[in-house]
Image (cartoon, helix red, strand yellow):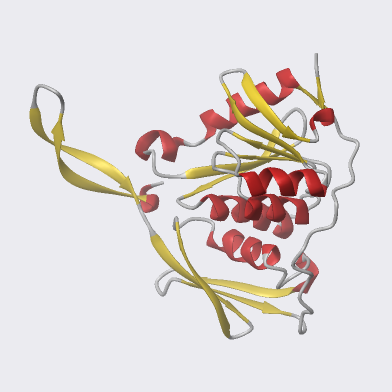
Length: 238
């Protein structure tokens, strides 16, 4: 975790006192993603699991479709670059997602248990308060977990790990610490994930898109409470 933080001297001020102290701050790292010798994006991110981030980003953008498309992934941390080479020219995937078709159901206690486990996972957040987290889960266990200074990046790191390690996403849950915008909903629906759970709030377009795409959207999931915004039928009432 040391690569993800930096320590600074600070003035600590309370209502009655001031003192010199130190604090640890999360690192922000500019990462350039290069696909087949063409620069496609530079992302501010946390400097960990950069191969997962690059692959997940490219998959989310429809620039690669599967692990079979990838010939080589090279991380150059010193230059802040990840190079991804494909086996052949890839036809970009459609920008829109198809409707998610899944009969999976989950109970409210199962959602609460997963969220509680999720909250306890990120030591980096506990130390700095400066990152978002994301996780892929089934109805009982968290399968993949990641954190990053960006909420989109954290999700792409999860998807990149799943793609590179042959971990299926279809019919599973995505848990996020961040606000659920339409972009997040679209990113999740493209992986055929029927349940999206967040500790935070959705946007109006996020709710409308989840309704349209058949995705169950849960917000403010914490302290054994949650709001069901779309396709609530997947959450059993026991």
